[in-house]
Image 1 (cartoon, rainbow, N blue to C red):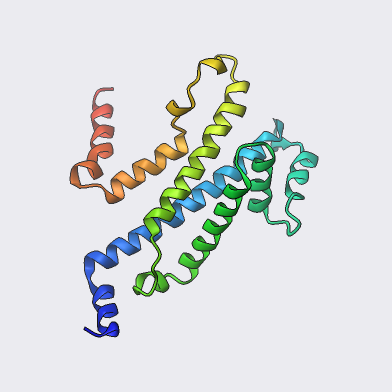
Image 2: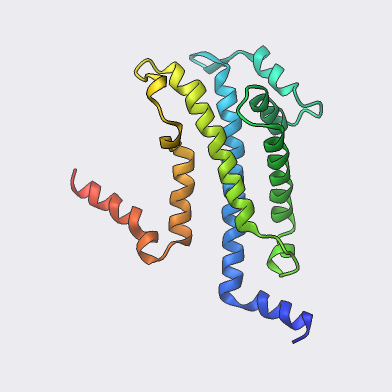
Length: 198
């Protein structure tokens, strides 16, 4: 089979095409969830109160964070802030910047991946993205949330046992989107079972 025929065969194969479209969709969704969550967490760090118009922030502190990136890219500034706070390393920042490039490529040129011309292993990239997201989320729980909750004693919290809500949501999406019939319907069935028991 010629290369052209092979590419058409891969592109038109229903299972292969569905899998690639699903992978792109899940990757971009996860990336956007991570980006929004990381930014909103740091923004909330500068929350000082609220009034009838809404929340009040320490804008000077927030603007100091934004100035960390000379190009005024909010996400890059946020990642530098996390690095400066010890949540992530320079290597993590570089990896997340690479993930941003991949997200842009998949969003603006999905045919490069769908058409079979890419050697990209999207599963590995997705796993790396989720692992970094979890690392930052666990750091946030251990260093911000726990120390602002008087009901929690920090020294008794095991980092390995922490399952942030954002990571749990990603796992639920993966189970529903990629699981077998039982796994995909588990949460839906449980929801109605719980409602019926109320």
